[in-house]
Length: 415
Image (cartoon, rainbow, N blue to C red; front, top):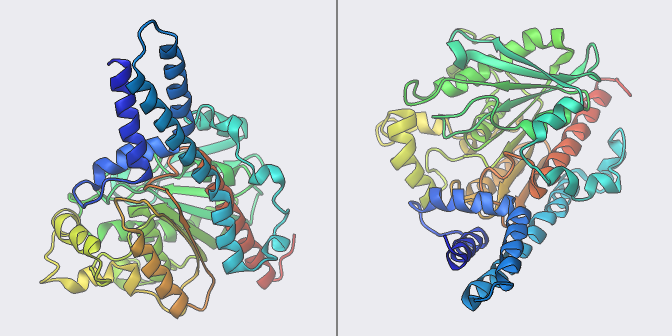
């Protein structure tokens, strides 16, 4: 591909990242193009500048390509600056929900380095597994929690600083449209970060649709919570404190598990087990599977994807099943504390779903609800370390440590 062709592709990718192609059918290609472009904008900017500089020294210059390179560079610089503002967006959300003095309740206040953009670690965003090993993070792999072969396995992340007992526990639920994905593909930057600070992090598989239609997925997440309550003490975790997180379908499952503690319809054969969690941090989750919000995007997802592939049921004939699966409709006064995170440019899950869910929580729940809607962020922005995802990892760390400290204080435990 020649210089002009490369710059045409780069300009199209940049434009889509800034303003994604609209429409339900365009959502998936717009996501893939915009997600990688937005989160790898510094790298793409460097390549674009280098390509343009090399071409500018050629005997025959293509001024059209150079003009496109200039426009793309400006657009990519805008995306980088937008990503860097995630630190303020997340911090503003926490201050609004927790109070201006919430950092006083942390073990240590965030330093300027904690709030700065970690440029060095972003040079190779796919080398974070090696960084975790250097931090002493250990993964106990493929521990059975349910009798479903590899779909009934979980991993546990600990580190050399994990205490022998009483560490807070985080359960990570992977996404993948309820149909694909595994426990070792998502949430890794957050789990490695928290494990290095002494948390016990658990990543879980679950049965996938359409082979195992709904509600197999939430049943397995509930079974994992029950397993954690019974077994996590052997790994240093506190079975009385379990927070839950996940992205996309994992965000849906995390939110639903949080608002339906001990729900018998999701606990067949283990109805008496405790499946409550103390806090939830869903990222870009699906909250309205029934189309109850009236959002056209939610109705299209329900009719064209959820009904035929995940539920294998008709929303007209079995509406109650879809309503039971919707966190938006399951909020009660006893819902735990939430930190909801969504991207304003998400083309797979309408951010209006997150807004509706947050409104329901704030209207009904007695607990704290923080909401960060990140300008310019696409779906799945946290899969690998990027400017935006690193800021959100640290913001999630602050929220969870604030919550953990409150939990301990309420029970008379102090650092």
